Length: 193
Image 1 (cartoon, helix red, strand yellow):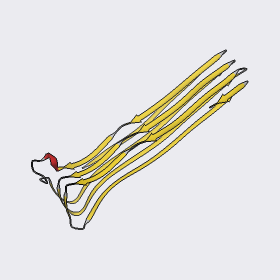
Image 2: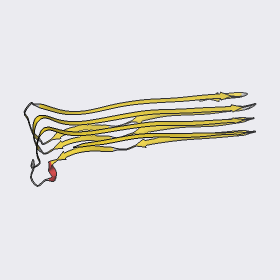
Image 3: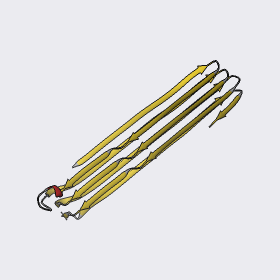
């Protein structure tokens, strides 16, 4: 058996405004994934242990999860006297990927493979701009990402006979995070965080 989950996610939050006296602008994006991808052969559901018999040239149990998050948050404001703004972006991937071969009897002519593969990719950008003609311009931005995946490939209580002695039990997890926060202020008094 095999199980696949491919989850791309894109989000954007943008805020802007202007005023003759005071301008305040804020935006935030939050992206979360909580996927579970399971590929399982389990003989415990049968009446007798090891009564699930599998005979094939190749026996494969494969679970593959791929999650991608792309998020953008931006805030811009301008005013004659004072401009205040904030932009924040947060992304979190906490997925579980499991491949299991449990309590079975396997007779494979070539290979038995139990594999779990978990991929996570986060790109998060936060941009802010504030401008004031004579007064203060204050702008803050923040961008962050987190990956907390669980990846498991297991064989439990299983008898395996492989003619070529090829057995692969493998779990792999590959993650990347790119986060960037950009800010600019213009005014008689300016501050950026």
